[in-house]
Amino acid sequence: MQYLLLIYANEKAMLSAPKEAASQMMGAYAAYTEAMKNSGAWLASNRLRPTSEATTVRNPNGRKSVLNGPFAETKEQLAGFYVIEAPDLDGALSWAARCPGAAHGSIEVRPVWTV
Image (tube, rainbow, N blue to C red; front, side, top):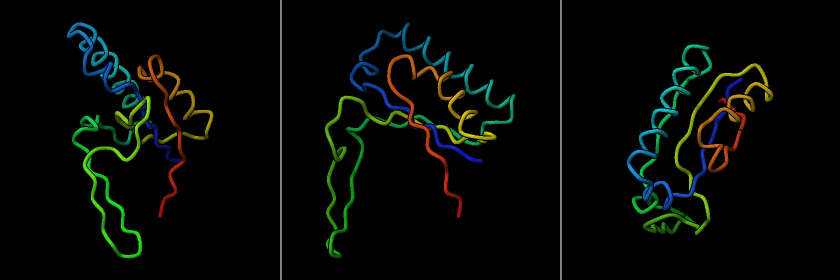
């Protein structure tokens, strides 16, 4: 079954982290991604640009509304994602617990409803 691992983190802390800390985190993500690829679990992943570059679109009653930035102010922002293949929820949760982002933020695990 496919699962989406949504990585939430404090964007301000990430953007203001010292270069050495940011480099270490990128190395940890590279190792994590490589482990997923080697196991066959990895399907896709990417890092997201800051919420300051986001655009939110709504279309209530056919009237399009476009807002610059994120829709809601929150303590943590969506920073990236992984799409993985796991035999079950326990397998997906195991990968989520190993994600470097779990040490500083949270990882939401969602089953993918394939169409």
